[in-house]
Each structure stands twice: as structure tokens, then as C-alpha cells.
Image (tube, rainbow, N blue to C red):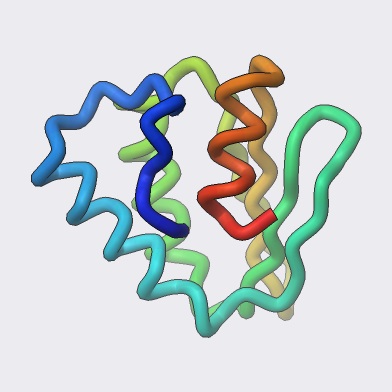
Amino acid sequence: MSTSPSSLPCQLPKPNRDERVRAWRSLALLVVQRDRTEAGFRIVFEHAALRQLEALVCAERSCCGWATWSVRSDPSHAVLDVTGPPEPLAALAAAFGL
């Protein structure tokens, strides 16, 4: 995740937001694929990211509740799907490199 765009309706204070961005960036090397979906976007991670991904998604639900965050797992991958209103979702997708 890149620096949080100002168009994101995030409830975290800046120091916490910066820490969250760093946590997302720590997963960057585990990204296998990024795609836009009809309702939002999907990021596929190596399975090793699953626990940290689940923790980050739980945290995001508390500060970015305008989006729907879901994580699923298969034997080799962890998959993040995010949906929500078009404008903030577009900014969030850009922050995630889409």
C-alpha cells in the first residue's frame, strides 16, 4: 500500500495511519496478483501472508468501515477482496497499486 491518499475517509490519526501503511507494505513481497473486480478489487498473496492479512483486515474494518473487507484462504494463497463506494474505493485501489 502506498501513502494514504487524502481522499480516503480513514478514521485513524496520521501516526497510526503511517504505521498501518508500513504494515501493508510489509506484505508487498508476498503479493502474487492484483486485479480490479466488478465491485472493487482483489489482491492474491502467498499463503504465508494469511495471519498478518487477517489482522490487518480486522483493523481496517474498524477505521475504514465504509469498505467491505474479506479474506479467504486456499492451500496456496490468501485472497483479499475489497468492495465499497466507487470514489473512496478508487482511491484505496490506487493506494494498493491498482
